[in-house]
Image 1 (cartoon, rainbow, N blue to C red):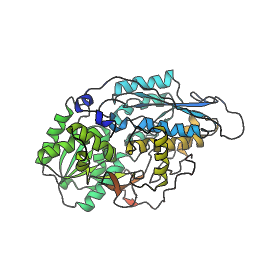
Image 2: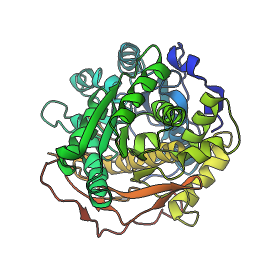
Image 3: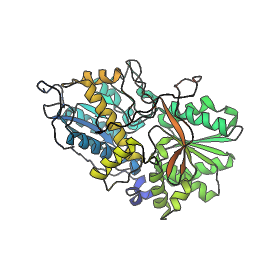
Image 4: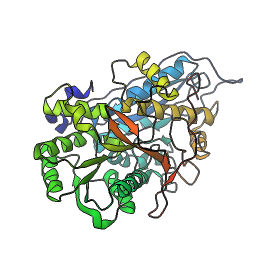
Length: 441
């Protein structure tokens, strides 16, 4: 992966300071009849300004530093095709380094100084948990958090906050259901981030996998001073447990360290990964970078990883969504790899534009929240959204996949489930709509 190749273990262990502000630009023009008004903070007659916190440097940066530029590329595309009712979207994203104290400073700046209309796609479970109460106290729309924590579905305490991707409990259930069906009786171990991200994933796994099969649970600290050393110790414990299947809820850097530690110990279990840590291009780049290798080394180590996905596969070159986003990528951000992180960034930006159009020509902040509460069309998601006034979860399902020759290959149809211990995992019969011909919702 182009950006990950530059990142070794030492730079990842130290968090560097830095702030980036990028504004989208383009041509306004389309809209309905009637005068545009400055209807809310961040909304003028010509622009809509939104903000975000993103890990542009630090342990979570590899791959994830592409998400905001990819979202911005889609916004630029929208701006160049008339904007949202004639307004251009300006996207300001600040570097929080995946550090909650910096997130707090960044978000206060965006809301109190920059007066953004909404917070969009703030990335990270621990980081966004640090600011969600403040965002809600300020009554600022907090849309489509870049995290699958079930905690975003808290309509009584966080009424402005909405998830987007499948939450980790649901995802854990889908992975667990697959494991129980295909590895019945095998010894299972969990490797997971020791916060709500990993804990929610393990909760979902536990709903589907009998406790008698689970022989080890090894949590890691994402802020460890020596990530490689910590993962090496945990991997040795996984090997000692004789687990035949290791399930990981880990960010990409820790997924790569896990795979390298397995290799060094001669340990080769079946590796099952949350979507969070399984993008093939990102992992390949990290593995090559950490091991100081090149060529096919990293690609060989990820072959056969089992995962899930809630977006179309980049391996489906004929898919209308992949065609659309590849075209935008090639025009606006050609220096970035066309990988799963870029696909994610453009996809969530598309959903945000859906919500903006639904909020109306002169939206207030409450109009935007009401628009999502009223439900959104499925769009690029492979499964329906859960959105309602009483449910702020995002996607309700995903499909199981395997990494083959650098892309995700589906292992079956899209499946949906809920957050409960007994809710069934069922096949989704909803057909995913094609991308609109002009790429605009």
